[in-house]
Length: 287
Image (cartoon, rainbow, N blue to C red):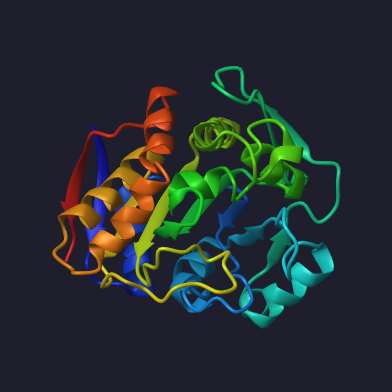
């Protein structure tokens, strides 16, 4: 049974404390994968949330370009967003797919896709800290650690490939459940690449039904819940979902409707079935 460490106190210092509780030291050159935040989005978590742990590990902030038009779709424009949102001012930043060719990862166990295309610079790192903002998502239902491993680390082409379930030209028209399963396949590829040298931190704050990739997003509908940390991406996402479902906030139903109407649980179950992690976990409360 995986352990997931949880605190209701949402502070940068608590992020660092929960990392210690996981008990896995990230060594070598550490990549801190996070979301840079779409221009106009009011909900994404900025540099101040992650500064303590990134500075402490000497990690490099990593992002990838988007597969749709907008300020983060090209390297030059995305780098400006990273500057405007404070990332490149606070940290060393690596836009992993700034230049091709992509790094191609095999997924022999994949149920839908057998390849994953990520930014080639990912190969320069020995371990990874996955920093995720748990919230809703217009297509995936919810976004957490598994989405960060898959769509988050996909190159611009790789994102289209996952969304299209192996047919990038069908980025917005593929079979929906196949897209959800493709995210699980891609997440397994990245986890395998790092050979388990990953720690996951999810923050349940500013929880809108929309993703940080949305320029026009709904305001948060659920009160902040806390921070979670684990070395198991399935367990940490499952714990976030369970905490959401168990809370008594009147806005929870709106977010749950978003998750269930998009069949968001399917990605989690597919990742579990692929052996990415366990849905059985022990939640360890930390004051």
